[in-house]
Length: 92
Image (cartoon, rainbow, N blue to C red; front, top):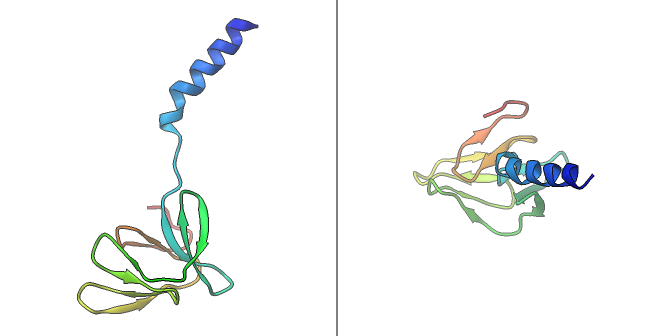
């Protein structure tokens, strides 16, 4: 039994780095509110959040690019922190 436990513990330790981590993103949920998903925790947006590509997203889901173009998140879309939008139901 002790050997089985050690084998199990070693397997979990070995596989831990390969576990898929939830990617931080901003999304508009079906209630029409915008949420920032950080480390698996959902936080309702109250402030503007800058993205890596120079864009800024506000609590209404409006994304202002570095060039000044404004787009709006649609329900179910995910805005990744690099500024790319992942459509609902599509994998990156």
